[in-house]
Amino acid sequence: MSTTVKSEKRKFTRWGRIDDGKSLIIHNSTKSFLNELKMLSNRAYNVSDEELGCRWGAEEDKPFLPPPYVDLPPGLTPAQIDQFLREQRHDELARKITSGELEFVDAEIRPPSPPPVYDKNGSRVNTRDVRVKNSMNEEYNRLVEFLLKNLPGFVASADYKPLKKVRKIIIPLDKYPEYNFMGLVIGPRGCNHKRLEAESGAQISLRGRGTVKDGKNRDHQTDEDAAMPMHVHITADREECVQKAVELIEPLLDPFHPKHEEFKRLGLEQLALVNGVALGIVDIARCSICGASGHRAHECQDMPAPSVPRVEIVPSLLHTGYYLLLS
Image (cartoon, rainbow, N blue to C red; front, side):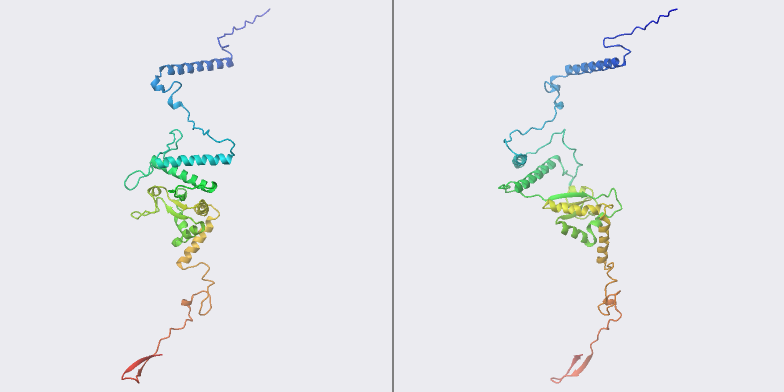
């Protein structure tokens, strides 16, 4: 007895067998690609020339490509190329600043605008024009400082005024709201503040919200500084002084820094000196009257009583009358 196995007839399509999973994936991907191509074709057919903006694509689809600088003299070293580009940038910025032209960055690569800041009259002080102008002036001053140091014979313009180096360190009140960072930076009667300025050579001040009481004058800080969170404002003529001040202040603002407890202890000792209760000094101080330790001269029991002058009435030999004799 023979059995005949009837083989099932496999179905084929134009792109492959239906039961073949790999071929089915190829078929589906090809179909989706054709549908997408058809959709793009219909979109291009329906868009008018005015909406398209150009022949090859929409205006917003064009990538941003900064213009290359191709007029470099041949045979320059990398250092000379860097100096040449700085000189060209300096001349360009000088011309734009003189004419009042502002460099607005393309909207696609422009950083987000900061929160608005208003002055006492309600006018905004950090508009885009003001921020762009300040940025151009800062870059121009950096280029002038570089050229004065590295380019012999370079002379800055007559109206050039070097800007002070500024650094702002935000006080972490949001992380440590119970810490008295202001008292730690200033110190008792400003002792620590004076020490920081003397060691760094920079001007240090506290600015921002919470540094000025209501109704008090705040002419020492701008409206933008007053609207910022509480921060340490550092200014100096040289970058080295600013960096030195940052190194001295950062441990004060970090409770977990190894030097934080040391600065805190020094602040308590300064406070004790100011209040007249110097820690560890009363025990070793000796009285200038008896020589004993533990008390001061005005507290000494052996202090002699003050001498009272004796007054006598003596008759005068030269004229009629009397006069007083003190002994």
